[in-house]
Length: 360
Ligand SMILES: Cc1ncc(COP(=O)(O)O)c(C=O)c1O
Figure 1 (tube, rainbow, N blue to C red):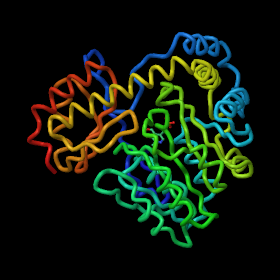
Figure 2 (cartoon, rainbow, N blue to C red):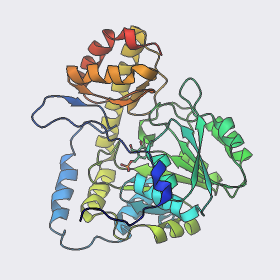
Figure 3 (cartoon, rainbow, N blue to C red):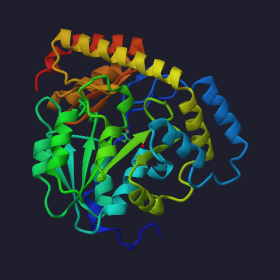
Figure 4 (cartoon, protein in one colour):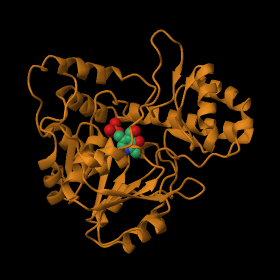
């Protein structure tokens, strides 16, 4: 009796799959540049916190992650009642959408952007309105503002944008926000904010301070290297933060993740050094690709984008054969995460031989 007659929600029929980045097969030697992860292993102080936390796994964690919330609030100079933790910022995004989307709500989003957006918007019972990027892989904020209607409850602003790389500039974000009604929630997804080096890029925290309809999403998965532990957060006005907390999964952040994140915040200097090394490596990857003749948008994140359309899958296959796993988006482009130096060297060997795939 494997067949069930229980219906599932109609809306799920259109749900796009979340395609995870390729994993290194057991026993194979390859570099994994397919999931925008941090290539560095946890710092010794973070490992020690994880080991210490392990002795308590028979207990539920602190439901509100109090120590971590206080540490994040102090780090960002916001109030603890403005911070809401969750099992990765992707879970927090789901909670934010569940907080504000009534049935029939519209959510405006850039596209192509983070592939979880259409999934979470549909699951929240809302309708996604996709606004194409500009040709150089930037968010088209004027077009996004023009897509806002009376039904729009949320606008998703991914900066830097996954998978294309550019960050939204401060001036364009200000004009965008001034064009929007104050009751439309603007989610600034800053998963990669620590890698931003462009001084013209928008300052999320300053924007949050000046605009009560802005919520920030941040994560410990990328710069802090805790992707496997699942911890991220929202920064929102207290009333909104309380509502997000109310719909969050109870005990959604493990004690291990909470203590590892606190230890990571304490290791600011080492973390910043690692980020600086990855930003340098990003520069080397961008320069290498451009000098070979590839058109690559500016990247302010820990990945670069090759918008090669139909050739995406072919290039990804060639990279895999050479021992570098990258992330193809079929028909659109290839995203390559910044990792080890040797991985960049290998990638550049493949791309040097693949200029036949460079044109769309
Ligand atoms: C733009 C963006 N937001 C959010 C996330 C989710 O990160 P996490 O759930 O690990 O915090 C990702 C992960 O790839 C991302 O690219």
